[in-house]
Length: 500
Image 1: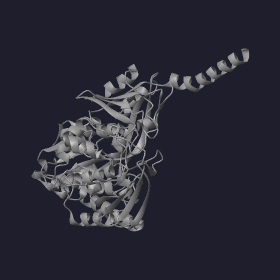
Image 2: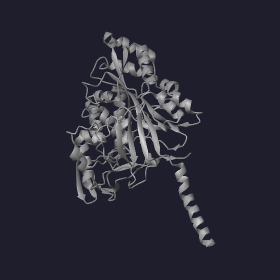
Image 3: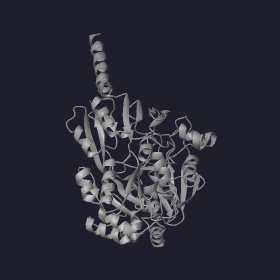
Image 4: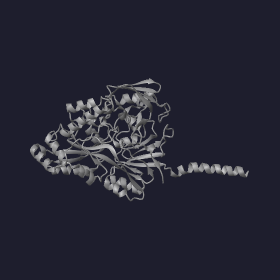
């Protein structure tokens, strides 16, 4: 009897040791402060950060990247090239959507067809329009066909989310955006407009489970408030901090700083179809007037890194030796003088609260010192996106922007920004467009780099835009949150842990 009692006690103690630590360290609810509420929860519409942070956890992708940046399986377990233009994916057969229905090969093919349908008009179309066919080839296989060799295909597919055909067909695009159904580690719970989106852990998820029972993504436009929330313990993770605010967290008893150099590149967009920036001399003056190192070291606290081209070293397509104009205020002033009275025309510089306004204001001052008249126009992110991706007629004279394709390939950056088939583009330069088409159609890595070098050189000469710096993103986090940010800025909740 004594032995049995001791055995039972030992068993109970073993059970406690196995369970109690996790229970003690568990955190039921994670609160994340974003800048804005998502502009979309439909993953085939926007991929701006505030949307991407949320819906990336609701949906699974065909393939994904691990924390090292390597492309790894997700819904697809493996893939093989059948030819230079055909690739077949083998899919998991144990995945269910949040409504309980099984994810099938039909859902994968439908998701590709949906985002590549010109009538659907996805702002991401330029990322996927090389795909001309998606077809089911077996119970767990799907074949994609491209209109020529496409070396960036896998890099693009890491952000292709799988949506349920039966739900989208039943409710339509607008209703699906309001109440998305995915297969990811978290399921949609509610959207209080202007306040927060709430997700709940998917206990039936096929992969690594989410560590938090629920997650609230709140819209907190003021960065100082995001920091105050961390210090007060009312939030656990805050995005898009600047270096001044990060300094406030260095000695905080409740919070810490997490940062990483990302694949995102900050740049000054210019609509070269609109005066006065349609004048090459004005654009050249703009390039000379901006002190990139001053922005990075003087304002951004050294978290970022000046770049001479519209890519970061994290991208395939980055090349060494591109020469950008260095800061020279005297040359900038001289060019403005040469351009004459038309250079005095007021210029609107579009921005949004999601961007660091210290940088935007510094750029305004630098351009003003060169002799330009620049007025900052502030708008919410949804309107910023509408203006910036609606073609040359709607794109403003200037805008501050930061671009990431989440694919780490030049095609995902340069093609949408410079090719006239994209709503983001206004350059309308035949030479650049020829180079971009060639680069996205060759599997020869050396040839691709040569073509992208020519694109970078052309951009540096004509200044369709001015690359500024590789963005070092800064997060504030509660002391207990264990998470390593990655260059592609994917906030995978099920890769986080909590330790008090």
